[in-house]
Image 1 (cartoon, rainbow, N blue to C red):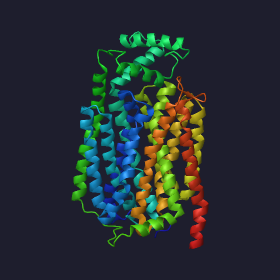
Image 2: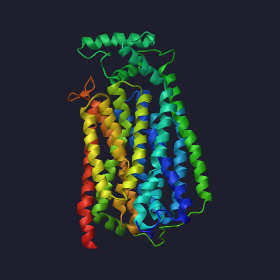
Image 3: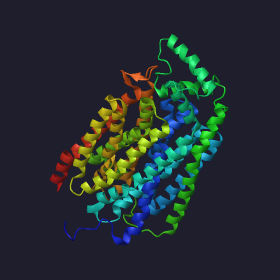
Image 4: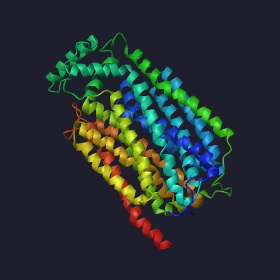
Amino acid sequence: MSSNAPSLVPRSMLVTFILVTSLFALWGFANDMTNPLVKAFKDIFVISNAQSSLVQTAFYGGYATMALPAALFIRRFSYKAGIVVGLALYGVGAMLTLPAAASANFNLFLVSLYVLTFGLAFLETTANPYILSLGAPETATRRLNLAQSFNPMGSLTGMTVASLIILSSLSVEEFRADLGSYQKEESETIDTNLKEFLDTEGGRREEAGELPFTTLSYDVALADALKAFKNGEIETYRDTTYEEMRNHDLSIIKTPYVIIGIIVFGMMIVFILTPMPKTGEHHESLKLGATFKILFKNKRYLEGVFAQGFYVGAQIMCWTFIIHYATGNLGVSAATAQNYNIIAMSIFCASRFICTFFLRYISPGKLLLILASAAAVLILGVIFINGYVGLYCLIGVSACMSVMFPTIYGIALDGMGDEAKIASAGLIFAIVGGALLPFLQGFVIDRGDSNGLILGLPAVSFSFVLVLICFLVIANFGRRTLKVHHEAAESVS
């Protein structure tokens, strides 16, 4: 490597780089503390998988709603202004969990997450191109990958909070544990009201020719028992009514959001008071129509947006439904299942640093092709291999996903110049894949028969066919980047 090679981050911009990089961890925390709530809300409110997946629809729908307005805002004002507005919206959304928990209103929780991600859309639309601008263009993709390497640290913290503070403290998890004892015929300490219901209803299921509670998947049995509790067929559970248990659990869920809201407002003050360089700023009037015309003619960019949508959908499906996979197929508690998610995120974090190093020697398109192909093979194991081997395959997918988002981002924006701010909005809008695909996966799981099977496979395992399709799309984008777009760029030059 030449001694005259440009530095990754110029010394004059190091403080700004560190501050902006901290934002990557901040939105990672919100993303991955929220993922386990899909399962938690399903059990607390006793709703379907598709309904509970509206958590992700609201969360990632906020990105889709605010991506372009955020890009226009920072184009009109500055990166710093975009960051301050983003932090303000993040904090307000987090604080809205207070009235949501007080009123036990699932829809208000969705609103709070929707508003929170207005802030995240501002932060991501701002931080990604800002990091690209903090140094030489030749090192932009590596610089973004380095900054993105701190995102999983925030994600890992959010997952740990979800496991140790939220899921392990929910009363509904005691309910699940009692059901597990009953299914294993170790029911001496089970709540008597729950046992009476399971004995009676289990007999009816057998008379109807269906599987008894002792052989049903945990998730199917739990859904039936919780529905009975909510409807009053089980009057109390451990001397607690359904409403009391629900309110207790919602109070636990709101607490981390209130704390992170306070931290976010503190960060907002830091950014307001800190001078930041105006790199990449342009003050000429924006010709939006002309910019869109340029973007829509750029096949690499359009394919990048498309691939990014499928990547985000795949990531959110893997990290959301790993809990369903472990609880439903293996019979472990949600808190234990979340621990496997933490292992997956740890692997993701380590792999991101490793793959960022390899980007010095392997082209982004080639690395993307290799990683997406490997992920597709592992997902086949998730679908067709039962037990812990399938779970380990699902955990291993995180190693393959580690640099997909920033790599697709960097490839799509390569050479964009002044259009990068608006172009970045399209890539942030692509996060809508995380709003649509998890809902579709929840819908597929709900299509399982009374025994929780689809075509002889556990419904949650079968649902990962959607993730397989996503990785095949990403692999094709890597292939086209490596061959078609690279050759086109060479012919132009």
